[in-house]
Image (cartoon, rainbow, N blue to C red; front, top):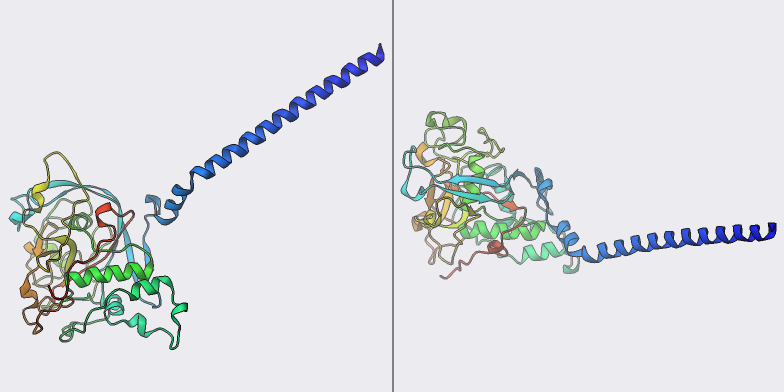
Length: 365
């Protein structure tokens, strides 16, 4: 009897152990299967996340142009919806600023200063190429350098490109729309990041920084001297970047100093595509092979306050190269546009119609 009871007890223990082991094995197997499934379905998302910054990564950063000690600052611009254009009642209003309409903008970074000669000279005068070690072989050159070197550089300017207004720390001027676009293409190849000119809508959104007044500080033109170099305080010349008060998002000289190229080709009725009650998503009038007219924004040191407003639009003109003796005229340098420059942006995620965009202007057009 005792022996039989002992055997029954042993069998019970065996059965309990077997059940416990089976449950443990099933749990481990299920966990392993779940992990394998997760990894097999995630590569595309994981890859995208590693190449595209997220909204949480939208913080200020310093960009150093590879192979040089030249740096510039990029400021985060949050996405949002704003009212673009100006009402007929606004001080200095022009017909091409209407109708006012709602626009939704994706997040991006924008250069805090206008692009300065310090940066542009590296591209324009191949300063990055000159700094390469003598005898360095092509095999030691990085892929980024090879891509950047493949971008055509500007031809020499007709005369002193600074016009004696200053170089270090000063905005690059007399740059054509084509040249500004090629600079951003070179910069993108050099850094491995997607830089370009802002769209007209992105520029106005960033300039306003949440305001709806004629100027990003308010409505009183008498206060403009604290925020901008314009006709009455500039001594008829552009000034070193960053010497006036910035807007609420930390952008300097968005108004005055030099007008700034945006991507868009100029059309006086560009805003007519807007429909009442519907916000346009990241609109842009894509540039074509035409050299003129393109849009410059913000007004300049040579403008009165009514032209130095957030909504003011300026169309480029062949007269900006009137003194150029070359035929055809240079596609890289203006001779009569000491009032125009640019600054760069970097989208968090590029919109489809701007991916791979480059200037279509040709030398002999």
